[in-house]
Image 1 (cartoon, protein in one colour):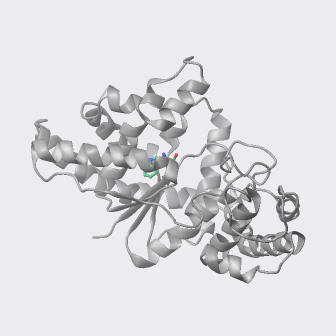
Image 2 (spheres, rainbow, N blue to C red):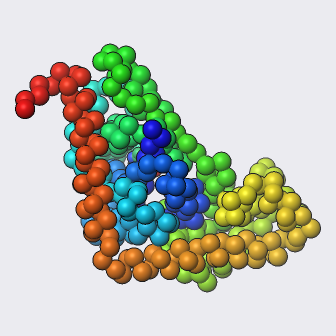
Image 3 (tube, rainbow, N blue to C red):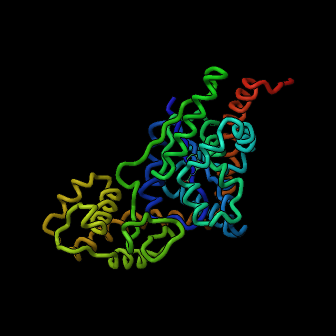
Length: 328
Ligand code: TRP
């Protein structure tokens, strides 16, 4: 069984990077096998967030999932907080991942460093524990993630080894899958920094209007020289635009480079803007329809009840294996 599971945290505004790296690909998985996509709303609490912002972001994400072509009849779309097995398995898994390995996680180190060791919640530290529960509850084989999350999937794999070695063949081994093109979309104003949900002028947000998106691409940093070639060291800005174009058109970077040979920067940027707008414009239209309609609640209700069936079966298997007494 090739079950695919992925989740996105409803923090900040989704960017073109999230679209090209994740959303755009879910539909392909749906055509190939069984897909579970959820909104990691409990993970969103690991850094301070306003309740209203969390609600808005969560609804937006459901609409973005649907706008990307996921069919709620085939793909199971749900909220992490609607399936209590996530929290229960998290409680159990806390005992199978160790403080040492959690404190070595890059995401934790980066965030806690920025926070000056001030008010770091236990949830932030234990983030990968809940994430392991998310993944392993669904016996997921493939976990599409951004490259910053590979380390967490690796930790979930360590947990599977540790757990199965002790209790037998209980948990299914997952594997991270990173999209080759599109996994690293950088900021348009600072191509050394990844386009992120929380940053500035160089990030294209999926909620930006089309004119703003065009403006941001046309205003992207220009490297020295005049040729459109992929060269991360000397032309990070141009390389980033080539990546964006290739990911948008589903072609390789080499193909994109070939296509633009002889182009000047200005015409190149215009072509990239055209491609991005052509891709995002129907997507944004569907999003608008969905966010104004009344489909979201129903999708989440259905999704949660389907997800619960799978998740509760796994939870039961785990509980039995470790010796928590079951009574009928
Ligand atoms: N940590 C992921 C992110 O920040 C979101 C996430 C939570 C996730 N649980 C997951 C992704 C399980 C894949 C599988 O992007």
